[in-house]
Amino acid sequence: MQSFGVYENFYTLDSLSDHPPSDIAWIGSLQGFLLFGGGFFSGQLFDRGYFKQLMMGGSLLFVFCSFMLSLAKPHHYYQHFLAQGLGMGIGMGMLFMPSLSIASHYFRRRRALAMGIILSGGSLGAAIYPIMLNHLFASVGFARAVCAQSILHLALLIISNLIMKTRLPTGGKKDIDLKGVLTDVPYLICTAGSFFVFWGLFVPYFYLQLFCSKHDLPTNIVIYGITILNITGILGQTLPNFLADVFGPFNVTIATGIITGALVFMLLASKSVAATVVFAILYGFTSGGFVSLIGPVAATFARNVNEVGTRMGFVTLVSSFAMLTGSPISGALLHSPQYFWLRPVLFSAVVQLFGSGLIIISRAMQAKKKGTWKL
Image (cartoon, rainbow, N blue to C red; front, side):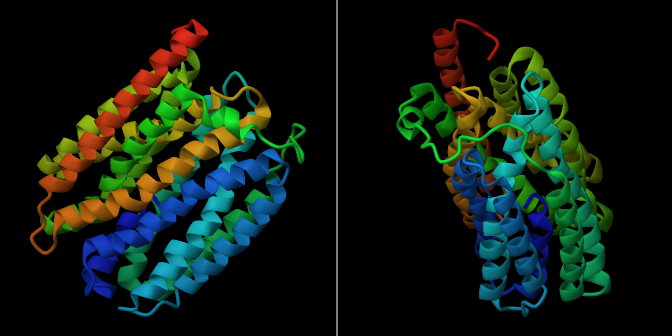
């Protein structure tokens, strides 16, 4: 999903050129919605001991729909929407939260760092895919490029299913105390803050390559802009998580949220190779930090290990609605073919800064409740 900007650019300029960017963004946004929203349900199933079933089922669905995408015809929007947005999105939703929550079975003191390392794998893949897809789109065409990507998906998911397993006893069929989760006021405020940050956070991931194309930047930066964004995201999902284990995930998350919101304005000045590279490096680092830390923040509210998946899953469920609507709203504000870039930038920055403010309020309430600054 973090490399969807490659598809956004290709669809806008080529195979779905009869549709505006906002329509195309719905494909990636639906994928993100199901990735995050599915986490609430897969998180509960993980807590009840269905890890292997989720991994196998999600892997099969994701790979099947990835191959189906390679059969999608140009200018047949619904085919791309169903295969890439709906089908692959459901598969990702089944895989994401169990793959992240399993860290809680192996790590307690360094849980935030462990989750960050797991998430950094997504950034590594999102750094490789843009290079691969941009070159393959140009050399062998869309169908063969997506087919090659699907074969890679298949190989990696086979390895994942073979090596990943749970360690601790699960909650079994015991019901999770959803009432306790949904009446925890500091937790709910933090969840609302996460919604607003995610509402604007992925706008550069979706539109950076299109921005570079429309400002006639050299081909290399058009191709590698998203790759740079995701490579620095690898560091952003590990170093801040290491700091979170020292200073507390709340404190580091707030810092990354505020800085990420402020950095969006740099996109407007990224009309040269140097400026674009600097923006991609900084934004990839801080946004990667926020994405990887919001899960550990949610986990700090859990009263026992069997609540971790549900707490993290509910945050991602609420945030998924932000993922669903954020990029299409930005695409509508962009208003092709005029491309008013200030509008989506303002939207992205304002909602991220507002969300960070809500997380600050949640932290203050939780600090008072626990009597410590290290949260």
